[in-house]
Image (cartoon, helix red, strand yellow):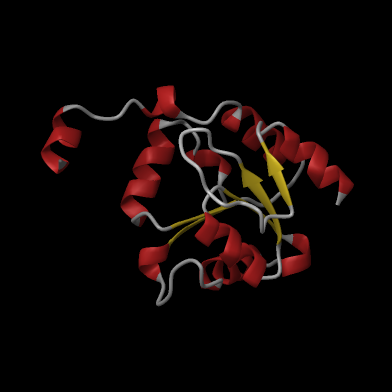
Length: 143
């Protein structure tokens, strides 16, 4: 499997979530601090974000491999908030996995779930579920 990825790399631009670049750019222009907190290894996070032309939008990148506990434990979000110098009432978590949603709620954050059509995930614990990333800015203005 690893050999196949090396020989036939993923086209990250083609699988990027629609409107991700536009939303991230807009949030940065408005002064939001952005962190990515993922279970993926740090070197892969950097590589994938760079290939998708999204790396420059994030102030903090955190990998679950850097921490002693992983999602659904809230440690990754608590660490991200500490690095961003924000508290849970200033933090919004955007997730698509049930473990990530649980971790965000356990960190006392407002959680937006991004619906994923490819598979079924229980996202009912999220504060709101969106189907289009462009909905994020409207939600942020309301809360």
